[in-house]
Amino acid sequence: MRPQEGLFHSPGTFSAVLVLRLIRDVALSHLREVVSSVHEELTPAHGLHTVLGLEPALLPEAAPAAPALLPREGPTARFPSSQAHVLVQVSAEHREPVLWALRRTLALSKGVLVLEEEVLGGRIGEGRDAFGFRDGLLRPTREHVRRTALVPSGSLAGASWLLYLRFQQDLERFGRLRPGAQERVVGRTREGEPLHDLPQEAHVLRARASGAGENQLLIRRGFPFRHHGEEGLAFVAAAADPGSYVRSLDALLGTQGGPPDALLRYALAVGGGLYLAPARDWFQHTSLQENPA
Ligand code: HEM
Image (cartoon, rainbow, N blue to C red; front, side):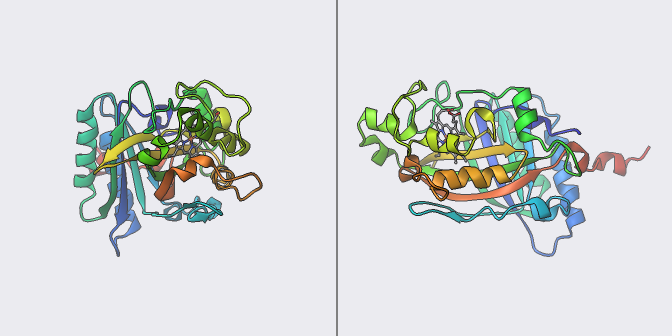
C-alpha cells in the first residue's frame, strides 16, 4: 500500500484546488495517461505537496463503494454538487511552486480536461478562517492520517476518499454578531479555547456529534481563500470510509436528530464533490513506458 505522499501534509502557506471536467468522448485510458503525467511531474517537485483525486465512477473498484453524497439537503441548508472528474490539491510554503503546479496541470491536461473551478488561497495569520477564528487546531500526525484517511485493505488499499466543498462566508452578517455570540456559533473562542455550556447547534458540537472530533473520522485539509470579493473556505477532507462524510454532513444539516449547525447560517456551500485519491500504483509510469530501456 503506497498512499499519495501529499495526504500526509496539511496545506502549507499557499494552497490551491483545481477541479477539472473530462471532455466528452475522451477515452478513459487517455485520461489515465494525462492524470499520471500530472502526478509524475508534480509529486517529485521540491517543496510542493500534491493530492490527486478522481471521480469514483472512473475507478471500477471504487464506484460500488461510493455513497450518494451530494447534493444533500437539510431543513435550513444544503450541500450542492458540482461533481466533476478530477480534483488536484496543491500546497507549498511559497507561492511560486503552487502557480507552477497550476500552470503545468492545465498544460498537461489540455485537450482532455477543461478547468471547471480554481480556488487559490492560503493561510491567514497563524491559521485562521475568514471569520478570524483559529482553525485546524489539532494538526494531524502521520499516524492520524494513516488511521483515519487511508483505506486499510482490499483493492483500494492506500487510497483515500476526498470531500471537497467550497464555502462562501458572509463576513458582514457574521460580523454583526457580538463577539460572544460569534464564539457560540463556532463553539470555541476566537483563539481556539474550548467553551462550556454551548448550544447544541455550535459548529464543533455538530461536527463532533458525527464522531468527527479530534481527527477521528476525517482529516481536514482545507484552506481559506479570497477571490473577486468573495471570501470562504475550500474545505477538503480525506477519509478511509466515504460513509464518514454522510454522517458528518447529516450531523451539520441536522437531519439525524440534533439541530442544524449554526455556522451554516453564515457559510454557504456553493459547490462540492466526492473524489478518490488512488494509491500511487494506480498512476502509470508514462516515461518508463515511453522509454522501456
Ligand atoms: C465554512 C465552513 C467551515 C468553517 C468556517 C469551519 C470552521 C471551523 C473552526 C473555526 C473550527 C474550530 C477549530 C478546530 O477545531 O480546528 C472547526 C472545527 C471542526 N470542523 Fe469546521 N468549519 C467549516 C466546515 C466544516 C465542515 C463542512 C466539516 C465536516 C464535514 C467540519 C468539521 C469540523 C471538525 C471535525 C472540527 C473539529 C471538531 C473538534 O475536534 O473539536 N467543518 N471548524
